[in-house]
Image 1 (cartoon, helix red, strand yellow):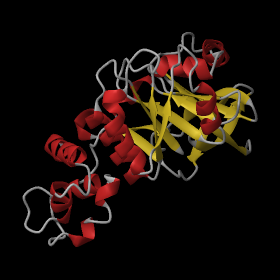
Image 2 (cartoon, one colour):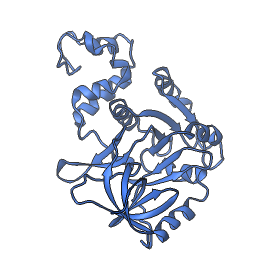
Image 3 (cartoon, rainbow, N blue to C red):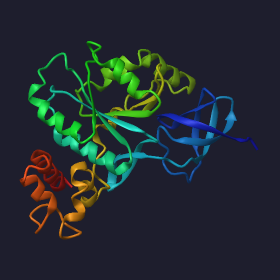
Image 4 (cartoon, helix red, strand yellow):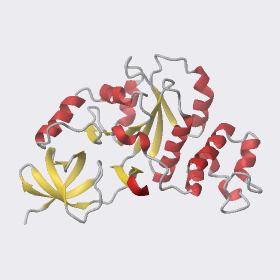
Length: 290
């Protein structure tokens, strides 16, 4: 029997999974009863031929990002992520509700969240400054960049070094142009994966892990605009708002919904201006969405 070797899942390719083993990519199938494998997973594989193998085991994950799937189920998007870079811009309209949703998921998934304001060359961002400052006051790092004009890209590269990261954000904010600025030979690498695994064209919806030239790994996942609140409770959503965390113990009721509940410390703090009222209102909107 062939021996087990550790590999890194770099892409899903239709019927197969591209796994990097000792620097080379092989096409793998999974053992029948194994749960769904995600890009970023460390796995144990058995080689069945020089360029093919079978995934026997998924190593323990330190984090998992999931998105809604059919029948109210969720499916994994990526595993072992250290940081989610939430990309947004003033064009299309800056969706702070979506940003809050991403941040709440990160707080509950033990993943660091970083904010990236793209297209700073195009727009006047003065009207966003108050909101952006609120996030920074909560300890979230903010990068102001332009993929097209190469503004702030060097700082972003330095921040990505040494971590597995993923970009998230609504479509049109420039995630692709940012990825291309960070991985100049992305198309070449993508085609190489497809050729090695004899899969023909690489599907554009597949999440793919790229090694960045300056260090670190970036998972490019076009479908990641929609990882949702599917498997979160209202209590977890409230915990996802950093400024609520020290107040949650002070609410009169342990199952406080922070709406019109009697002696709610969160609502009182928002009304008194001790925490941002706009964020509190967005929290209420998200609870409605759930």
